[in-house]
Length: 548
Image 1 (cartoon, helix red, strand yellow):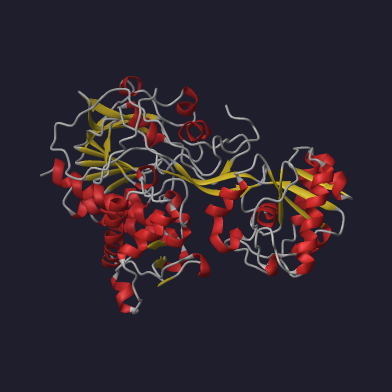
Image 2 (cartoon, rainbow, N blue to C red):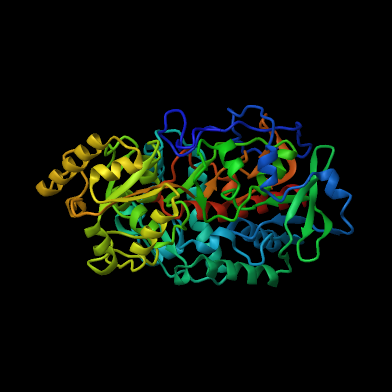
């Protein structure tokens, strides 16, 4: 395991490392291979999911669960997961005449999609109706190419962008009404391609898809995850399901299986095996445990580069708690384990979370350092400088002091308080002389109104000079994982040789190969838009290929 204090290994420049692929068996499809093929050519054999990763999931061995199944159901297509990818696939397949069963592990539908605010779309009728000046597809692709150092699959991006507006139109044809099309969070979004959900809540879109799915005859079964893929001579023929309500098992035989189980943010061993993140102090809002990835690896699927949709947080608290809002979402003074300032802390405001977190995790440790004057401002004064979701700039954090004091008293070792900067440094285990010099330098820059070191905006240059002083360690927080399984352009899962595993598709975040290390908020809503696109894409291909 990596050093407990290292967030990244190697160059520490990205959010995720290259992944090895796992193959337990080579499964070559006997069905016609899709013409579209962007399988990962750098995949290398691995040993499959670790025992620890498997234990953190609900996946079982096929042979074991087959013996437990007391019933068998049949359908054309079985779908695992009810996010944008899974429900989108269910509705699309049903529209094309397929008999569909959808299995959802949770008691409610939607997964992480429910928490989104909107989706990316290019060329939608809504954009044309509101006279949005559209960028060229080439301009959008160039944005991603430059952002990723030309390491993305531009052909995949072209397919996705050209289809994204059609995905928006498809939802509108179902009767769903978007709130508006605009940019996302002002200066963060580069293009007017963000289609806001009704009420700015993804749950409204999920409800619309679920209603349409039921109308079309899709059988939706909640609290019933798939736990193992059903195979026959290397071909996927369905799934074994576990009804959590009564602890029964049954088999679902299907011509095609579409996996969309929503990432693995809650599976730390899998994150550490497929990325370079150290989750020792990591937190997550995700409920995904990597079930789809592990099940697919069990039948020989290749894995693909996984990145993280990131935040930072304070150990012991959620990202919604005031201590996290104040210390992780505000451009205060950030010092590393040596007491050195290392970044433009205003990056959170100007570039949002991804690039901001890149800077944070480039260090062994990163601390937010501030004084009592800032605490008082946040609690009862002018309020916070920036925020997230319900916490807007200017909002107050009435529980901020109490949470700081609570964490100091806990002895957890991630929040410190002292009357002087030197004493604060000693409590942190940081060189006191160097840290004092860095704080003094920062205060001098604040007094001059110009950040000559890192160009932080003058509106955020607020000195640290009124004791007592505080230091709060920022730790990695996973909003969700991006990628995991290797798929081709049809969202068919492939093995490490790039051959299709017959009968198996992956949609949603586990299949997303748009990004390398870092999600691009300039193309806001791209991830959830891809999730919907992949569901529609997989459903259409599955119906055409396996149902004739």
